[in-house]
Structure formats: structure tokens, C-alpha cells
Image 1 (cartoon, helix red, strand yellow):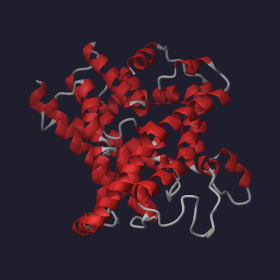
Image 2 (spheres, rainbow over the protein chains, first blue to last red; image 1 turned 30 degrees about the horizontal axis):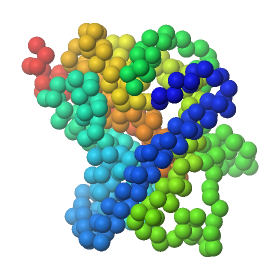
Image 3 (tube, rainbow over the protein chains, first blue to last red; image 1 turned 180 degrees about the vertical axis):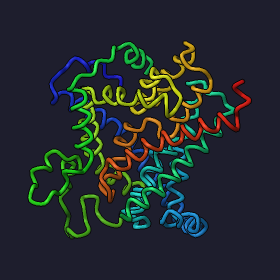
Image 4 (cartoon, rainbow over the protein chains, first blue to last red; image 1 turned 135 degrees about the vertical axis):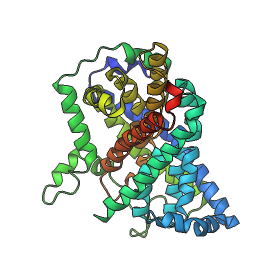
Length: 158
Length: 220
């Protein structure tokens, strides 16, 4: 983002390198620490038996989206941070608690309701949206995520 | 970020055929349309997932990648995250090229006529909304500017806020973070992206309706 030489080159190979470098920075600075943290949190939840508990409690609600109950941990984490939510999804997949169709159903929801806590400050605060309407926007994002999961469920079954 | 948003605010918007071509190629590249077309393997050279490639396998090829099997916690997480780095680099490298050739500007131009009828927003707000697709912070800064300059009122500000808040930084976040999931999507990579883009509008329309009914008193 802060690469000022961006516009000076017209060579597509150079431009690719600039983007790939950004990708590397994001992967190292955002993705890897988040995935590592998510793996550790998932391990803690597993050792404490909380993962199974959440899975059982939320399985009726999640079954609406054709997801196992444990998928709720992805959504709850994504609400705090989309990258952490992605990390949890990846970790659950690695432990075979989520399958490929579950990941596909969850993918749009992770970003539609993702990082809301962070973006309250970075977006709503910066743009000066009056606080009175923040809950409305938050509920809207969650509704967006719910509708997206239902749509994905239908798309997958096609 | 602020210098970035200032710059994008002042650049005159010129959209040539190159920009539209770039947008079309971008959509095709990520659409998965060229993935595994029977008898035309060469089409894979124009497909994101194919170019993402795969790692070789370890002792038990059916189960093991270089990440290994049955790893747990921090060490497993680190090695796994390492395996995601090439996908992210490829996604952002290619995205940078499409952006350079004007795909984002073309998208802005196409979006503008939708804003008034669908969201009740002036066309000028299009840039702030499109900017949000790339950078949450730059989009928020541009929105604040429009409000300060009285181009939009409070109601429009809230509608813009709702469009930006759900799926903020969509394109960047999806390709940078979400690409970690791309390998397992059972639908083309572009489908969730389109769905999220559509849902941004659905949410904003919902908020517009709420402001016109439930919160009606606030604006008169």
C-alpha cells in the first residue's frame, strides 16, 4: 500500500513483483501469526473440551446452514478478526472437523461479518458515522453473513 | 494511508478500453472458468487455481504434504501457514497487474449508474465505495471527506457506512487472507466474491429502508 514507486513502472513483470512482495508481507505479518494463534487457540479449546461443547450447543443453529456445530467457532472468531476466523477454519479443516463444503459455505460469511470490532474504530469511527447507528450496521452485517451462508448452501447443492 | 487516499481522490478518472479489458480478464482469471476444461489443459495457463499449483508429496502421497500429518498447535500452524504464502503472493501479484491496467477504475465507472436508484447516493460516492474494496481505511477517509464537504448528508453517510462495514476491504481481504481457503472451495473462487459484493448492496438497501422507516424521525 505504501509503495510509492508503484506507478513508475509499466513492466507487468515488475508490477507482479510489487504485488507479490505485498502478498509476502501480508502473509508473514498478518496471515502466519493469525493462523499460528488460531491453531493454538483451537488446541486449547480442544484440550479443555470446549470445542466439543460449542459444537453440541450450536449444532441445531448451524444445521440451518448445513454446517456442523463447531462452525460457530469460525464465525465468532471471524467477528473479532477475519484473519483469525480464517485461521480457525483452516485449523478445523486440518483436524477434519470441517469439510470442504463447510469451508465453502463459511467463506463469504467470514468476510461479510469479519473484523467488525476492529472496523468499528477504523471505519465507522474514521468516517464519523453516528454511534447511534452502529448496532444497526452490525446487525446488517450479520444478516448479510446469514443470507450468504444460505445462498452458498443452495449454490453447493446445484 | 492518508496520502494514498488524497492521491486517488485527485487522479482524474479516465477509463479506456484497456481498463474494461483488464476488468474482464481479471474476472475470467479468478472465475475458475478455465479450470480443468476437458481436452484443453492449456487454458489452465489463464486460471488462478491452476497457477497456484500444488506442493509435492511426502512418504505417503495420499495423505502427506510437506506440512506432514497429525501435527498440532503452534508448530503445525506455522508450517501450515507457510504453505499458504505462495497462494497469497500469486493472488496479490496478479491483482496488482489488473489494478495497474485500470480494472478498479472500470469497476467504478460501471458502479456509478447503480448508486442513485439502488442506494440513493450521488454518483460521486462511487470512488469512496470502490476504494473500500481495496482499503478499508482509505475508503473511510474518502467517505469522511465527502461528508465534511457536504456532498452527502448524514443519511447518505450511514448508508455508505453500511455498504463499507460489511465485507470491508473486500477484494484485498478475500485475496490476501481468504486465499488460505481457496484450495478447498468447491465452487470457483469468484463465486463467493460476487456473492459478497451483492450482499454489500443488499445490506445497504436494508439500512436505507430502515432509515426511511424506523429511523425516519431522525432526518426531519
